[in-house]
Each structure stands twice: as structure tokens, then as C-alpha cells.
Length: 361
Image (tube, rainbow, N blue to C red):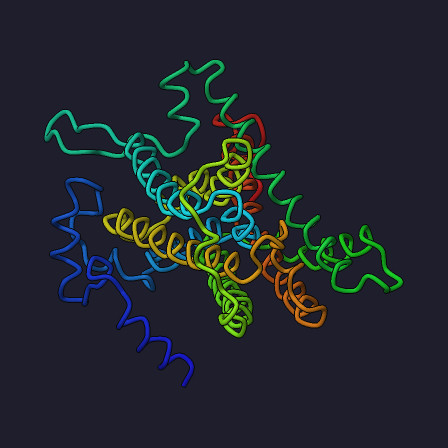
């Protein structure tokens, strides 16, 4: 029954550019072949269950991964961003979404070059490393980009574990377990992530991360709606405080961090022709969720809005939300972890003479 309901809802909310029956796949792929190089309209190559697509992901699974990246833990700081940015902060949530979506498309387009014979785009690069080598030279360009990516991904992984510890100590401040012990327990819980071999498994976890995200939104917004009688729409203004607005902008910009995953997601998509549509609607949904959450949160708590809006909730509800946020952090961890492992594998463990180390498989 759950799956039937899920399929019904999906059929109603799916954008037209992501819909395609089996009869339409061949035509759709043929039309997209020139721009994205999708296997010449071979229908079987677009079947998720076909052996050639083992480990690859659909556009929906790619969207869940994007949602995992841009609907992250920083959502609880968005009302604080609106407090410092007013309506400009809300506009920034929409504007930054557009900018990040547009730059993401440009970055993926850098992986393509015109075919000398047909003039149509053909994929010739598969990572930011190769793009950097083309721009800055093969000696240092790729190494610098790889180091930057690896640092960001590993710091993101560490951040999620630290957040789990902080959230659990916030939920149970009087317990016998300290923050570091909570971090260790969460790290042990995440050990099975090491056995993920492809993005399809990561996408399933990202889907449940999206479900948990909706639950958090429903709980917090539901609480805010119970206090709607106290809302004062005049407290949100178009005035800019140039001292505090950068705080709001920093929170908003940092909450959109999907570009680092895009080459991997696009490369692993079964139907690359749907990449741009998937990216568009993922960011539209993120902008709508964030703007609504930030606006309603600030209307409810006004000048008492704290950096993390969960601290404004009643003690019992705060404990529940903190536990749900821990689950969200644990489900957010696999995507940057997998991306970091894939980066290390491609650069070091492809087997000689391609790389200095033997293959790990």
C-alpha cells in the first residue's frame, strides 16, 4: 500500500521533463543524444534493471542525492538568517538557489567539448580534476583541485559526526554519556557505510534522508502554526543591516553545496538527458522549502530566534527534533563519504600503470 501511494504521489508531482513511458524512452533519448551523448536511443540502455546499468541511478535517485546535499542540517539556522536579512534574506534563498543551479550546469558543461565531425557536444572529461588540468596545467591543476575536494568532503563527514554528538548531548544533557562518547557511538553506527559500492545504495539512504527532512519541516512548521495568532508580519522588512546581513547570507550560501557531487551524479545517471531538469526542480523545491521554513520560523519566534531554531522549541519537542536531526545527520553522511572514497580510488587505486597503487577490488 505504501509503495502504491508513493507511486501515485510521484505520478502527480513529477515534472513533465522527468516523465517518460517505455515507448517514449527511445524517442526522448534520440533527441537528447546530440547534447548529452545518451547511447543513441538504445531503449535497453535506459532500463534501470538492465545489466549495463548495474550500480547506476535514475533521475529520481540523483534528485534525492542533490536534495541530501542542499536540504542539509543548516535548515535549522534559516529563521536566524531571516532575522538578520529580512525579506532580502528570503530573496537570497531563492536567488542563491538559482545561481548554484546555473553554475552547476556550467560546471557539468565543462565536461563536454564539440565533436570535431558532428559539432555536437561529446563528453571528454569526467571529473573536476580533468577540468583543472585543462585550465591550470596537468602538473599542478588536478592536484590542487583534488586536495580541495578531499578536504571539503572529509570536513563535511567530520561535521556530521560532531553535529550528532552535539545534538545528542542537547537532547540528553543530564545523562552519563559525554559529547565525545556520543560521537564515538555515532561513528560506530556509520561503519557499515564503508561497504557501499555504488551510488544506487547511497541514493536509497538519501531518499530516507529526504523523508526525515520532511518530518522535521512538518514538526517545526506545525508547532509554528499553533502560534500563528502571534505572528507580526511587520517585523520582516526590506531594510538591510550591512553589519548583520552577511551573517544571513553566509548561512544561506553555505546551505547550497551540491556542486562538488555533480560530475559523479551526472556520470552515474542512466539518462543524462534529464540531468538539467532534475537539477532545476531539486533547487526549486529546496528554495521553496527554505524560504517557507525561514519565514514562518522567524514570524513565530521574532527577536528571540536563536541560531538553531530547535532551541526555541519546548524542552520535550526539542528533544524529539534533536533525535530526528541526528537521524538526518547519519543519513547525510554516506554521500560525502562515498564521494571522498571514489575520489581517492580514481586517483590512487585504478591499478598500474594508470595509478601508482593496485586496484582495491
